[in-house]
Length: 404
Image (cartoon, rainbow, N blue to C red):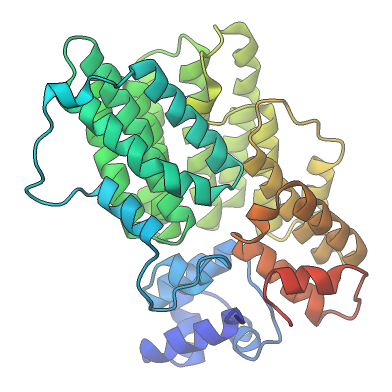
């Protein structure tokens, strides 16, 4: 199935908003030449700050402009049973029978926590199909344990439920279902409050900030991330868990700041975050890093590369990425984002051969992520429109549905 061009979506949304190209450019605060080139397909993609400005000018969510992830197009057909099951788990039917204590006789909290952690690992490996199949049972078990648990078991079960619902939110957002994602995250926040763990509430806030970014609510995202980071700091950071959560929130705030057009302000935040990573080695280690925010010197560097690419600084992005040694705790998803951004930077400096080689490496190490990234589509589309056609480009285009 052919993937709709960004310019076609832009023109359609502009007409629906009853705007001329000049009117949209004025509302978005960008050059009308950018709008024209996109709609005429002379420009294959745009940077995230520009996309956010266009979405704001059109009064739509960013996802409406970006389009669907390549692997989950919105065709108008009934959703697949696996996604319906996830929806039902996140939002149980009204007047469903209440669980009884004896229905939880075979539930084990340690096993439940392990299942949640394993599901997060699969998510970071882009194995969304397996996550989708596992998640309804995990959420159901966690909700049951939280409903019938007694004593210390109840807050522990609420914690597991919060992490499971947070994962449901991430999965839904990644599949382009932002409203379902926010519904899951709202329920995750309620479970986090019931668990008594302030760090879990802060982690869910970080996820909500990501959802707000996807909806082009950059001010809301930035405020939420900063507020949650301040709350973590006020509660005193005494272990690596607290520092990782605080650092993840600071990076989120930096991302929203950058997408709002303030690259220098975002860079200051990122420098503060990178300096703070030195404290990780001095603090007690986490029990299971998969259940805590991703924050390390490597993750900060990866985010710095991304911000540089998004703000038309490809040479800086390649300089930061060159010789980067990733720590073992960096999830596969972050490694793949780095490869995508490096490929984008190579395109921007005119090195099509290196861009294709980087994408081929991504295809080898994480084929699932290639199919779930609109950025991969825009990179390959730009390469197809360029003068150079390095070996391997055609196969990448076929993989992403850009050609037969």
